[in-house]
Length: 140
Image (cartoon, rainbow, N blue to C red; front, side):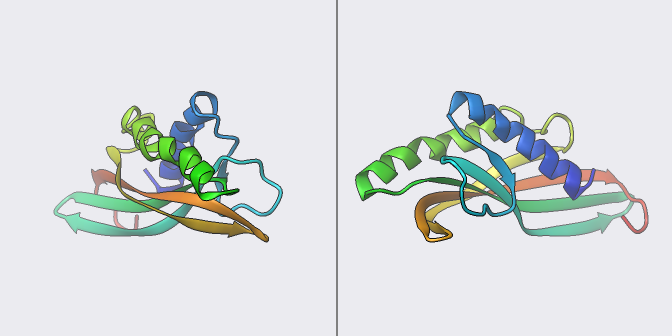
């Protein structure tokens, strides 16, 4: 398994929210201007790699952000609140990301404001931790 495989599996898990939750898009990287909201985007956060005996453990931490429209505080909070549970639930429902990884889980989340061009949005971002164990192969 590679980081590319892990992020592809994560994007697939999040696509289920396009139908169920009204998510307009799942992007790779931060959006430019002109995207319909709500949308999600995925970007690398950090990771670790350890080798023990004949086992390699890669841990990837990937940030998943969901953006909603910000017109006033109450409407923005109302739009943001369902995603706080919906994103972890979508990942929990497919914790192996279609068999691509050993386990994926949301380990924390934070809400803030995010600017696209000159438009302020409300954002909740999640840290998704993905662990994958495999037989040690030098250089991978």
